[in-house]
Every structure is written in C-alpha cells, then in structure tokens.
Length: 338
Image (tube, rainbow, N blue to C red; front, side, top):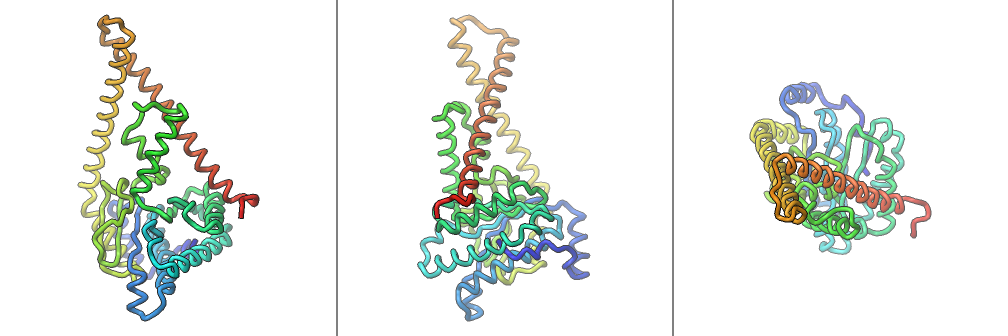
C-alpha cells in the first residue's frame, strides 16, 4: 500500500543505531499499533491541500515501518480510515479513496520485494463500504501476500472497534445457526477469535499522535492490557525519537502489563472451567435419573465435554476462516464483477 523501500535495512544514522541497540537490550514490543492522527492539521499548518497532508501521512507510515523493522518490531497495525470518516465532506472522502487506490496499485507492483522480505498485508474492516475497484485492489494485495509470515502490516480501513465486536457476535450467531457451535460455547475467548484481528497477538503498545487523548473506537477490545502512549506531534512530523520515547514508556510499564495479562488469562481460564462444569452438571442431572455421580465419573464427563467443545470451536473457526478467505479470493479473481 505504501512505498516498499521501507524494507531496506541499515537506513538509521549511527546515533539512531546506537539508540536502537540500547532499547533492544530491554523488553521490546512485538506488535505496535498507531492512530496516525494530525494529517489535516499538518496541511493547515503548512498551508497545503488536505490531500497533501494525507499523502505526507502515508509516506510517514512507510518511514515508520522501516524504523519498526530496525527495532525488531515485526507486526504493525494502523488506523487508516474509520467508518466515522465517511461523515467528512464528499470531496475529502473521494480524495482519500483515490489516494488509497494509488497506494494499493503501487503495492501490487512491489510483489517481488514483498515476497523476498516475507511481508504479509492484512486489511481489517468492512470492505463492502468501499468502492468496488478499491475492494478488488485490497483483496488482490491480501491474497497475494497471505502466505508470507516474516512481518505483518495490518491496515484498519472502513473500521471501528464497535463494528468489529458487533460483527464478531454475528459470526458466533452464524456458527450457532449452522450447528457448528452451541450457545454454551460462546465465551469471551471465542469472541476474541472472531474479531478481524484473530490472526494477530494483541498489541503490546498503542501510539496516538497529534495530542488527542482518546482511542476513537480503535482496537478497544485488543488494547485492554496494552501500553497506551499519547504524543503531541502531528503524524506527518513523527520521528524516530518519538517512536523510541513510546517504546521506552512500554519498557517502563512492562512488568505491570505482563502481570495484568497473566491475571486476565487466569481469570478467563477459570471462567471457562466453571462454564464447562456447569454444562456437565446439567447434562449429568438430565441423564442420571436422580442417582448421585461419583467424582471419577464427573471428572471423565468434564474431560469428554471439554474435548467436544474444543472440537466444535475448532471446526467453527475453520469454517469462519474459510468464509473470510473465500470473500477475498472472490474479490481478487479476474471474474469479480466490476
């Protein structure tokens, strides 16, 4: 989607390389998310057209991705276009769509570099809200890179977190309608696996630029145990040192973040165990004719039920992934309706 020269290594200055090496001596985030805010204010500040501000923002992302790779950060998620942005003027929205088409065309021309460096592009959001020609360009980019696994760029386009969560609930309802899962299989963990981001670990670090101190409906579910850093710099003016500052904030809070995540995993596992036990108790009561069940039989029944639930969930998630893959493959095919 962006200039792929960001893949090149060794573009940091000596001072930047030294600073990167010092940072990498501490715990580093594996996955960083960006709310790239401030493009329009940058345009006003520089007395240029809004489109130029957005263009500078795209170019800054290319540069930031290079910095991330040099820091050993191999997964980046960016908030490129919110569903709420459709409320902006038609002129601005049309300009953003045209700019996105231009960048995806450029990306498709860089397939050799993408394959060489193992770059996987994912686009997360409701693509049906976008122009059909942009949908097809996005789908081709996703399908052509889906087997790559060395570094990942997740682009949230026509996205809001509330829409994503609502869609995940719809997916679980679809699974129940198809007989793939039972209503008792629905859980917090399963909802997480139905989100657009199910193929990625949750972000370790979320950065928002421009001085705004809100998340604007971005990755609300996924960042509940992430380090969140708000920086006043406008996105097109973002620097390597701004990124280092944010990573340092993550390192300073690393222990508390990991502890919170560990407690959450334990609580989630306990909730699932309690749910399984409740379901087993109900099944045993229904089939036991009032006779007491010994501890060994209850344990065996629990193991059997848990194995069955995990198999249902596995089949459901496989079917869900197949449905999503089919959507992208159909859009990317030459026979897709223009």
